[in-house]
Length: 89
Image (spheres, rainbow, N blue to C red):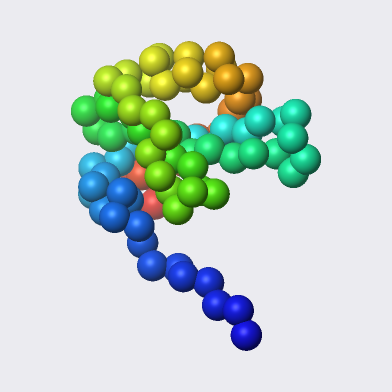
């Protein structure tokens, strides 16, 4: 029987209590679409994680604008909506 490891990755622990919002971005040219997660902390720093690589950080920046530009240059598109940390509290 195949099992799946669902433990948190070490990268998630770094921002566990400091994140402000997250967004899902996709590459719609692939089927199924390739997914990346953008996570912004309360200081405005952004990290982009790749869920297919055990949530490895694939890009970091000091601002949302830099992270957004990186994603748009690689032709990723945001999924409508943003999950705010405050909404989960």
